[in-house]
Length: 163
View 1 (cartoon, one colour):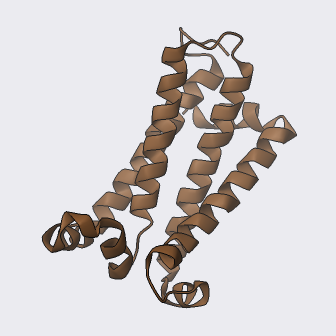
View 2 (cartoon, rainbow, N blue to C red):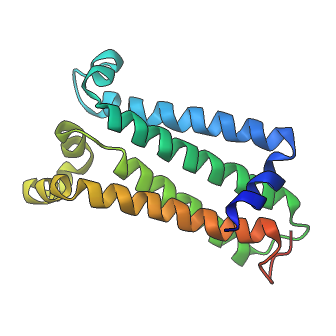
């Protein structure tokens, strides 16, 4: 499991630990506050009152995953002497896809899904609600795969991009 040595390497420098905490707090706030922005008449206190305990757990898990991914990518970007565009593209795509998936996976109420994906139609929104748990599991899987590949880069197991 390449995660633990990579996390130790990245967090051996305090600035990357700070990036992790700031990114995790920012994304947790965004995941909580985004439904407040998109649903008319919603406020933060109401959103907190309707979010179930497992919703908070999911938000925390996704925020920590994305925060860890961002801090590790910042470490990789700052450690590579000569960054090729192809290598940068893979890191950016992995980060962006996990961010988009985690935003999608953190939606826990019907009005949020309707506000986010209303352009897809009523049938698709109900389908998304029915398969919400699968989508959340997919979001966590995307983050885990992205963390696996960035961990390989941090540990020096990537031939093209020795850090």
